Length: 79
Image 1: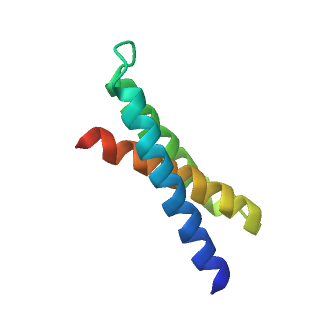
Image 2: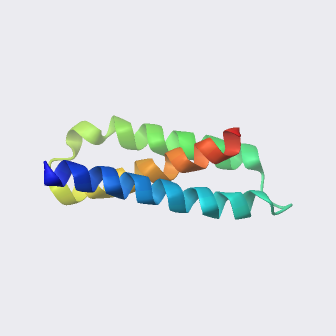
């Protein structure tokens, strides 16, 4: 139960941090927002596809951070 709560916390923190980072990054003229958006979706999808192979808790923490970061990027670029 505490481990699940920690995974959700990691996901939320990485989502928040990636929203701030992508917000700044997207303002740069040399950054293509569509490429950032598609890359975040692909990484998120690939990580989710590999989720059944993650057998240890530390790997689930890494997945939570990666998925949270990618979902934060997608949400910022959609708005």
